[in-house]
Length: 83
Image (cartoon, rainbow, N blue to C red; front, top):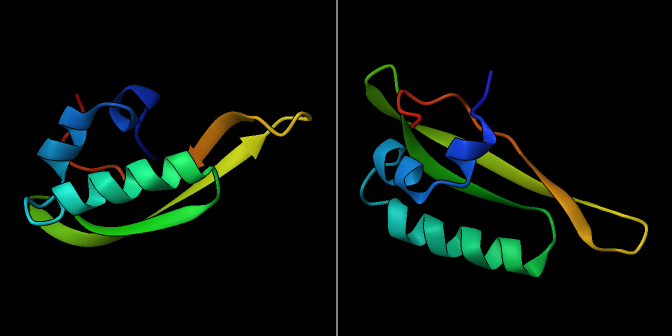
């Protein structure tokens, strides 16, 4: 099971679910990755079962016939927090 789109797009989700040392670098890497419109991945610690655990999050764009991104797919474990 994963998280919904509302959580994935919500910066507050990341601030609650991610380790404080990882949040700012992760948000910047994510911003750059989304702008480049190519597959990318992030490693960060997410709160799961009351403990921070290292997770790999992979992003992949789905492009339409015109080459524009129509959707992003991302792998996320379900963290303890999701608003």
